[in-house]
Amino acid sequence: MLKLSLLLACSLWVGYLFAQDLQLKGKVIYAQNGVGVPYCYVQLKDVAIGTVTDYNGTFNLNIPSKYREGLLVFSYVGYQKQFISLSQLTNPQNIYISLVEEVKQLQDIVVKSKREKKLNPKNILKEALAAIPKNYPQSTHHLEAYQRETLRENGAFIKYADAVCKYYSDAYLGTKYAFKDMVQRKFGVTTIVIASNIWASGKWGERLHDHFEDVFMTKFVKDEVKIIASRANENLSTENMQANIEGGAIGIFAKDIIRYIDWFLHKKNFKDYIYEVKEGYDKHLQACYIISFYPRKSPISDEELEEKIKKGKRISREDILAGEIYIDPTTLAFKYIKATVPPEYKKQICNLQKMNIKHFGYDLEIEYTQDPVSKYWYPLKISKQDEFIFADTIKNKVIPYQANSELYFQQLITDSTQVKKLLGEDVYTIENMMPLFDEPVAYYPEFWQEYAQKNPLSIIPDSIRRDLEVSKSLEQQFADRHLRNDSLEAPIAQTKKFQYKIHQETITDDYAWLKDTSALVRYNQEVMDYLKVENEYIENYCKPLRRDQKTLLSKPYQQNPQRNRIFATLFARLLLCKQI
Image (cartoon, rainbow, N blue to C red; front, side, top):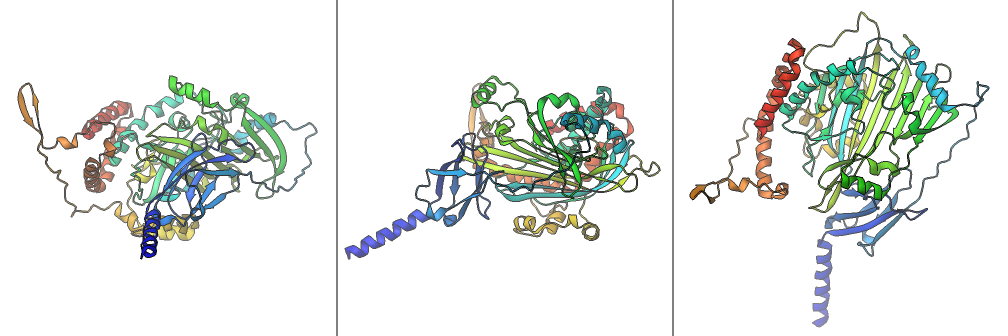
């Protein structure tokens, strides 16, 4: 009887242990020197649960009991993935992982130089910049394109948006823009679009920012984009993530750094980088000059970083890129550009402030092609990935996000008889806060079915559908984004008796429980639950009005651009007061 009781007790204890969540703590280090690896992904395989390591390579992760048999994956760019079975962990509170560099076998490439002198990377770059006027369109032109944006949370897709676009693009001059050419755009229609975005989305200041945001905040002159059609799913975040990728269709277009050379390719920046050059082949097996670049400035130390943060000083973020530039040796045209923030510099774009969304990774790729008719080069594809962290000190977890933007160009039009200014309220000039996800364009399934037959790129990958089609199809989500549910009842807050005295007068406030003014209001679950229901009701009510709002806000600028800034400022203040 005693043995049976002990056996039963042991069984209950084991069952209790397996019913508890698994708390993991550990550190990821470089195998070659034992130094901690910052921003290494720690993900549960095939499950949207994970985190990233901090500055020192340490991590904390809570695994629900039902995933105790899962596989933990450690991944970092340039290093071999490491795997750990959770069921075989002997000490979950003391996990050490060593990452080993990937060894890639590269084929030796030898191309005989056509130049007698030794290749000089800066001279080649200068010649390529000087050749921009003969290699790229020298007047305004049209580009037809397809854009896609995705947002992942803990490795799983939570947001999807895409669009068919037509661009009215400025010329490739290979020179800097004068300040007088920037002012009208910066203080013109930009402000009105900010107001429109606040009104349409109901969200103030929430955005997943671009690492080089100044590129498309100030340096655009004539660029415009018209949204022909767009679609977006419902937000499936489990962490109440409301922020969107900034810039939209015009923001990703701004990454054509051959047109806007100021921030990176201009010769004034040559002093900030170390360059090397070799002769090789691109992916089409065509001969190229391959110029690699790396920051000249050493990465900031942990001590200096902490000191700058304490003093509130800005940390340099604009001269810390590394990558490659492929240049055609015959025409000296830029064919391909890849830029990224090296791991040792990531601390400079992410200070990992608590309770805030912080940037820590950036990758950019641009590929160019030559138009067979005009012989001009133009972008074939622009893609950008930004990585973010939300460090939640209340729930004691770090949540990683990956924001991807891709732009595929289908046609270049340079004929002056066809290139006209774009018209309509679906036209945007440069504005870094108008997200594609909130674009108020109705979903037309027939259009997208026909477009997919001609442009297979617009077919949504199965990997995205698997994450997003949890409760209903993406097509249904696209449609529901623009349909108001008239059966949804307005929420009514419950009343709770509360009295207080001011100047000997007793005041009754039945809604005082909603007035939590502490910094931790977002963790007052009762208040947050009610506000969530209220926000959902307002969002639902405004769905059919988004188009009218956008049309209304576009008219003042079209009728009188000179008064646009004053009107937009007043309107933005009115909207802010409305939200408060």
